[in-house]
Image (tube, rainbow, N blue to C red; front, side, top):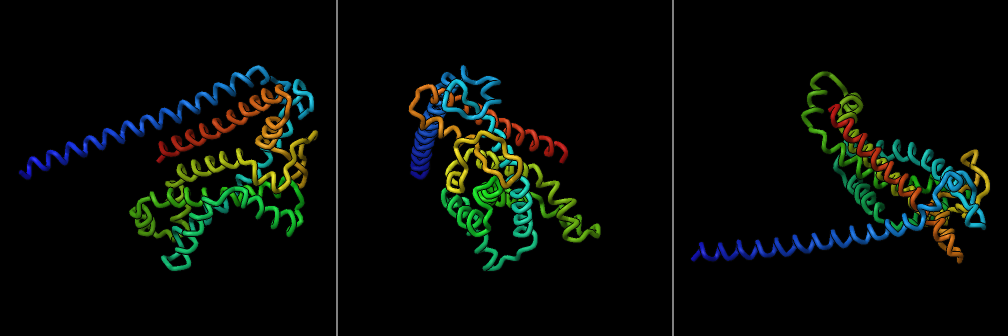
Length: 289
């Protein structure tokens, strides 16, 4: 009897596994199909408008003359300021929480807040940046205000990713370093960080990929849709590709929809390049280890 019941239980479990397997497969196919249709539509609309003139021209009210130069350069400026700030602060915070902070109520509170901040809507960070950087610190609606706001936005992501990477380093490596006479900081710099570097770099670049596609915080901080010059310092006005694409998509002329699609292609190429670079770095440093 027990054998018969166990066989029925196994058969029932197999049916459930097969059902959920098919359900997840269909869901995956649905998502891939929707993404493929979206990409096909964007490529069909924008491929004919993507040329050198589009990359080297400023925005214009005439669709044929419109370009993404100011938004492209503004995006690079934003990433060049945001990336080092995010990496230094995020990795330093992860090192402190994993290597120095003890398991106290305060450290658990900090961990909980970091995890919660990763799920806060981006518009909230925009309001925070407007209050602190634009008004309190009087940085005005500048590139620096936008970069600091984006730093706050992606910091929880890189902190969590760096913590996970540091946790994967075996404790035996730390003990071996201590046995050789190294202190805690030397162990972190020479053993822990090199071992965790692939995961840290991957998390950093993927967090930058999120920052490069955000629009709401920068609109609140004051990124403008039309700029006919290139920013020369962190205190200049700026625009970025998501805002420029949104501006084109909101125009009534049908041609601007094609221009927006061309801008989306440029943004996708940049995002895919950053993701490919993250994979390259991860594989490179994993081979060294």
